[in-house]
Image (cartoon, rainbow, N blue to C red; front, top):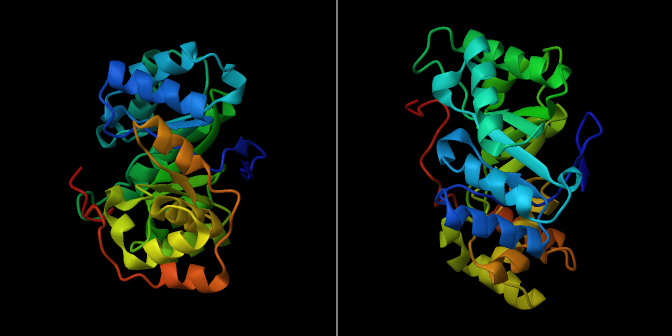
Length: 276
């Protein structure tokens, strides 16, 4: 567990639900993940599976107080009033009485909006209201780079989490260090690089040395880098494997070797050019 800046306990590894189809697939994956030991579940409006994720969590057999649920406001709802309405809609789909973490999914950027900073501030003001009203236990952002974050750091309640694409070969060191300096916890989406980075010889060599898999090495690297990963799989055995990363540690030399993996296999989604 990791402690957020406001004292809320935050599981070190979460379960991502991107690309899980609404209905039986998402419900089964979430229930299997709970059985495997996951307690943090990450969804979003744009994933179109909030209803199934919420339903699975309500029937999973684990008390709500032990679960940590995240969702996000999508880009077409940025702004103060529209974000508040989007939150209400998400909560209705989830079927929950409160949310653990609410994020701005992508920043408004200068490439699309002349008033991008004000749009982000207005959206953040809505999240702050939800937090002050105790409808959300923590608030944060996703895909925010340092120049997007700076305007929010002086807010009444600064961001507590920044969810970013981070994996071997795409470490985003500048943003991670900026977050660390300003007390924002970085969280990794696609921490296994959609599986393609796992064939890299550096990861395979380190995995062999520890009797682990390249996926476990990638997740351990993330944790030791101070980044909390959100792996996703529908395979129960892989779910358990992805949690089994606390019985070994990478040496400084191994960390440096993973850090040194050449940039490759990123999604191509950049916050300053994202088209929404």
